[in-house]
Image 1: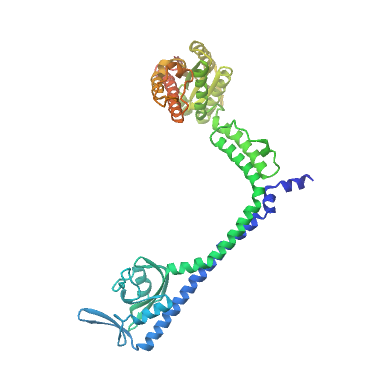
Image 2 (image 1 turned 135 degrees about the vertical axis):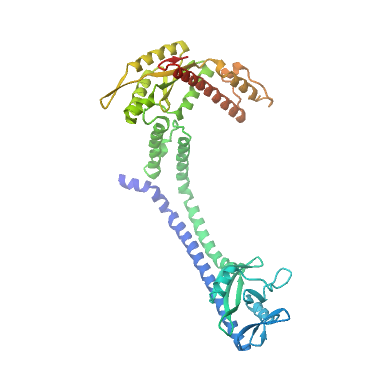
Length: 479
């Protein structure tokens, strides 16, 4: 019974019961295969028709004008003849043939037009024009006929068949070209294809209308999953996927449950450093903003410390990078345990760590840091029978020290918008410090950018104190 229930709940089964997949596939196959077959058949018919017409012309020329093809030059002019018949200027026959068949005819001496039915918009024939190097190479130089479905003359595309003409010495002296405008061929193709497209479209529309009732609910669930994945992509791992998706017994339910699992796995990978298990630098911005917002909105104090393992490069060089990883992991474990109930620790990069003390003043933080430094100094790290002792240097700043970021306070005030009047109105420092933010999107963006710069300035200040300590003896706290 349970197996049968899962079968009828299957997403695939629901679509198959309304024949969407078969009809869509049939429609696509009919459209693609039918259209392709018709196009190829018509193109082949055009080619065969041109070949037959060229053969007829050559036989006709042999009957009407016995003798070889030849060139005669007289009075500075070149004349192209077959036997005693001069082609130059004699277009009545080929014009009548074009009127009857819709096919253009051109006779060349070498690669230059002697007579042709092709005319420009002014009614002038393309006499004397040279043919392309491709045709010269394929037909004149090889002495073999050639069909093209993409030649142009006067900016018009043609399907064309070229036949070499030989003189008395069996040398190629010219060409005969029979051509049909590509636009005319394409019209024939489309005229044949349109009924196929109409039938296929009608079948697909019918399938879509018939399946609408069933697919709407499924699509709605897919959109819920899509929205949930979008939250994950934006690193909002607190979003929930509704139970009506995760409780389904079909593929959508499995997809939803996998998305929830993926969210948990990504949250750990995105926010945690793989080696140390601490928050990583990428997640630091989010935690710092939350801490700073608590200070602005609720007056919750905070302090910030950046620390660096002294002579860490020497540890790597002396004991190897594996030992260096053990040192980093050990320090991270100490920091994580020490910060419980005080705030949180972040691996800032390499051998640097960022500590955020929440609801702590600078004096209390300074005392904590001394205790932490004593713990680190006393730690002995054992790796492959080597005993490694380390020290650290820290720079500490007070998050309530407004002098660090006073320039940003001014910028926040200068860029804040007055929501009521639409005019520029500077926010007071009191409004800045207690969450006074413009609500219009542009003002909010400027506010957020300025707050980020303010946080960065605190971090920069701590970093400067850290490097002052490193340049002046290390193994100390600078505040």
